[in-house]
Image (cartoon, rainbow, N blue to C red; front, top):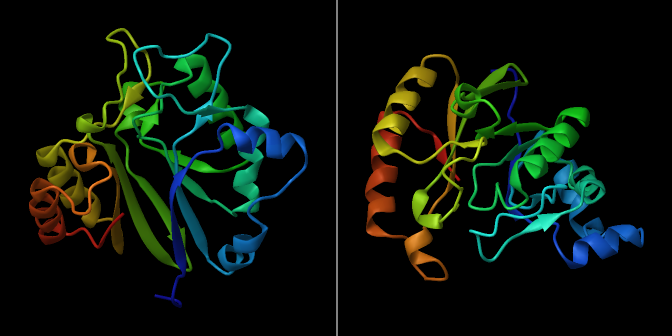
Length: 215
């Protein structure tokens, strides 16, 4: 290992509603935290608000969270390098919203993991090397958060499956120095004070299998 790596993790990033108007006005609401994040080698966030596409919205999901493409530029103010997109709001702006969001991220060289337009790509882990240290990321959304995708949706989410996650950890553990799990889970305990008992037991299994960090 060459030297220590400083990595910051952000929670749900939702540039919806008021943030759209703030961006149009040229206001940066993140100026107080940008300096802190700028000192990191790597910044990871959970992008919960994707772009609202031209096709409308996923009416099966309520509430819905969406933003405009240009407002995603706030990711630069936060210095984000990687976003997890396996969330319960990924399909709120339908397929076109996902396409536009991924297009923006790719264009601005912000990596994304956890959902894809191709089924095989959705399940792929992401390996990033920072300061000669390899980090393996895995991202999953739990069904109990209610993503509410239509049966014919041609966007693929990496759904939480305990046995599959254990298998993936074992595989990637051989390739990297650190395994980091990015979870969007806890739908049964939303707004509660404590995690569900299954989260605790699953987390211990993932750590025993070789996971180093669970976000």
